[in-house]
Length: 292
Length: 86
Image 1 (cartoon, one colour):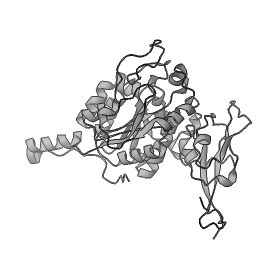
Image 2 (cartoon, rainbow over the protein chains, first blue to last red):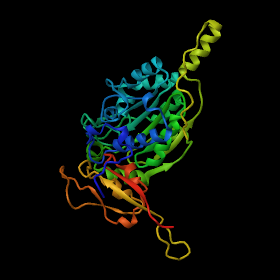
Image 3 (cartoon, rainbow over the protein chains, first blue to last red):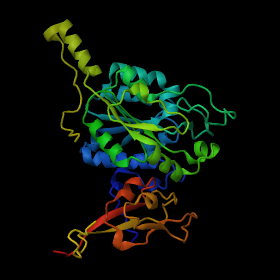
Image 4 (spheres, rainbow over the protein chains, first blue to last red):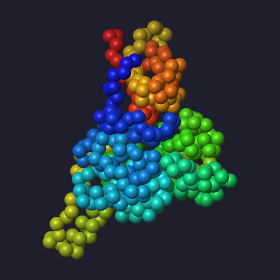
């Protein structure tokens, strides 16, 4: 053993900002690790890759990745990324944020970006709570779990995020936990090779708030739970992917289809209306990105 | 794993892990999910009071780098080293 820093993900990270603010046992770092390795494997042009994130623990990802990255206001990661993509279609735009940011305050943007099929890769780290602000109920909080804003148990129906993304028209939908590191890496790599709105949900432990408040142990216990309770079901019907409190978690890659992206649809429409006088808008990075 | 044919075959791959002790937060993911159980948490502390992992059974490590993939703090990674076995 030595102190030599030859970590393969070092070149993707701002190492001067380490150690990260994430708690011991938090899974966000693991997902970033997978993302960094997927960047290597997908051979994406790092000069043309940007990461946009919103507010929350997972919002810090943009600050730690040594790419062009933006830490936007709460819930507005997708609108910002949409503008970025439309202004410069050559970019690979990745939105990396939490479920409280993407599905609660940014829920409207999520569904409309999926509906329009904007060419974005959205990685949603779902830890079932608002970790940074003290463990409030989030849109994916499972029924029965206790929170600082639900001391007698949460009773609202949570979002099933893959189903939400699927029904709004996302072209690639997957869900993994932070235990499934190899599969998650492969999934991100595959998603880089596709065009359109791609949505990957990453179930992650929150040891400080969700785990502790519900007496579920620490991050390692959560990882062991994911190992035991996750059920691999590639291509499963997304309507069946609800997660209850400590219930089995169905993971896999559920949707993989092709649909014209926003710019493609716009070009097609305007060409049919204006004919030769319309100069098509660039449609994005060339297919040089080899997903797998 | 390499006991095919009953003969004592020397291991073809040997690995080593590099640990940045000061960046570790002692979550134990690497120790728990090491496929060959080569890691243990050290009994000593780092400056922040966590127990970083240590390669307790160096012969078992095959440098698969799964610890590196699990590490949330980018403080450990495995490297395959070539042995001069024909």
